[in-house]
Image 1 (cartoon, rainbow, N blue to C red):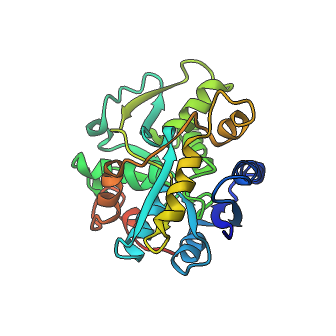
Image 2: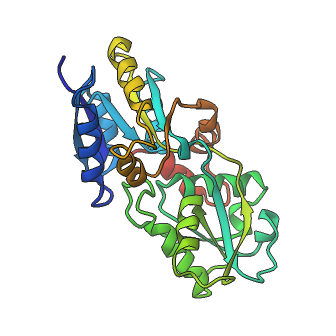
Image 3: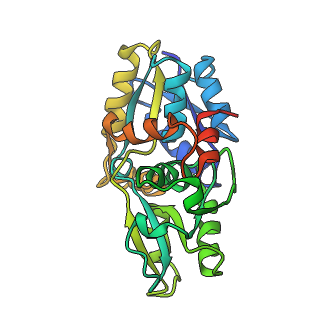
Length: 279
């Protein structure tokens, strides 16, 4: 059969070796692949909807936009184990006295890029769910690397820098960014997590319903067979940040669908409008 063409976004330099490794893994499979790299997720969503690629390695925001663009005529095929339990954290300087979202009333809240689920769209939704309106908090937005949907983590680090520089009281970030900081040179005890969101899902491989299951299902089965204990497979899994590929759990996207459908008027109303409107 012809190669299955997968779209991915080049948000960092190691995207190329990751996808070269995945292409090599599928070379002798029932469904060989090739890949196309995009500079942003909006272009990738367009390419999937227009039939220029067969699959897209989508962020959760790109997945929601694909569902909306196709009136639900698409499906998630697989995701990383780490995509099942993603969370947003609100982080403050140690000893801040903040013990939850209600304590943010009257505070300065640093949020990341307007197209980042973990750093802006969902944090704004959580604030609104906690009863905080636009007048209740001062939002400091950091629109770094728009188009990458927060993949680079840059806007989260910009928001955190605002906290460290005493320009904000709290910053929102994804759990993986926080874990990376904890493993790095962050001074122990300098920061504290003051609120942790419920778990939600992040990236997945998205296909249109027009992709024949006779093609997609063998592809998924071969993907799920990638084994952490196989020395040939582990480097790819490590670079992509997972131990195993899994079937999607669509319930994990419900909060993001709700956030991106939310009318304006909450604590970060401009965020909701940007999240609902593709560029």
